[in-house]
Every structure is written in structure tokens, then in C-alpha cells.
Amino acid sequence: MERRTSNRTPRGADAYRPGPGSIRWSTAPASIIAHVDAEQGVSFWMDQRVLLRRLRVHFLLLPLAEVAVLSEDRDPLPGTPREHWLVWQSLTKTAATTRVPTDAGVLAGRLGLGRGAQGMAARAMLGELMAAIWQLRSA
Image (cartoon, rainbow, N blue to C red; front, top):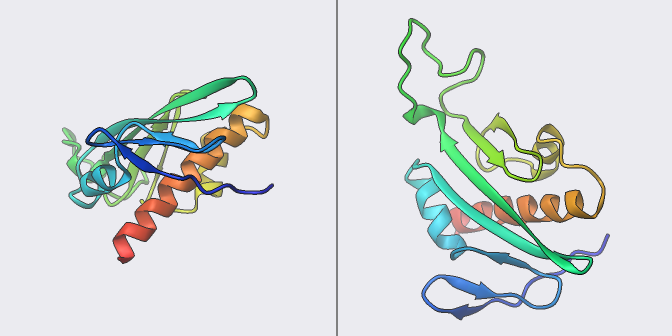
């Protein structure tokens, strides 16, 4: 599958206007990555044209290190280290724990994102998100 790169031009303070078929973010990727780098939970959406409509997927990234554990356990979820994040998305309404950034393809499978048009669009969004985190962290 050919991957398109989006032509982003600022619109307002934080939004981006995509080219045809590209992914649009609710806020500038740098804003999201700033929260991830500060190990703060963040919620945002991404959308992309799928067939005749735009598919909007909401994401929630929550660092498990910030979760108060009110039991004798040391980890917020059994068997999951505190360095992991809870990643939730609205397409399948499922969540998975992982390090951030991570392999987007593996995470997409764990989130149950299928291979249909909507699933592939959500996979592309997740891939662009993880690529942006890798890119901005290595800059």
C-alpha cells in the first residue's frame, strides 16, 4: 500500500490542513509529543478521508507511572511495568499497554484494528503518531 505524506500548513494556532487523503490532527503533533515527553496523559483526535467520509479516531495516551496504585502491588496493571503507557482508541474502543513510542503495526494488531478501509486508516494514523514521536524525540 502506498503511503502518502501529508502537506501540512498551519491553520490557526495548532491545526493543520491536510492534502487529499492525508491525515489531519486535532492539534500540532509537537504539542502531543511535548505531553508524551513530560509523561503527561494526553487526549486528541486524528482523521482521514475514507471512501466518501472522514474517519475520526480519538486517542488517549496515559502513562502508567502516573496512576496511583492503592494496593500492595507495585505495578498499576498486573505484569505491566510502570514505564508503559495505556493507549486507547475510539474505533474499536479498545486499549493496550505498551512503551511509547512503539511499533505501530504490532500495537494496531493488539488494539484490534482490522484490515478494512477504516482499520487501515486507523493503522495509518497510529503509524504517523509513532513516527512523529520518534522523529521529534530524535531531533
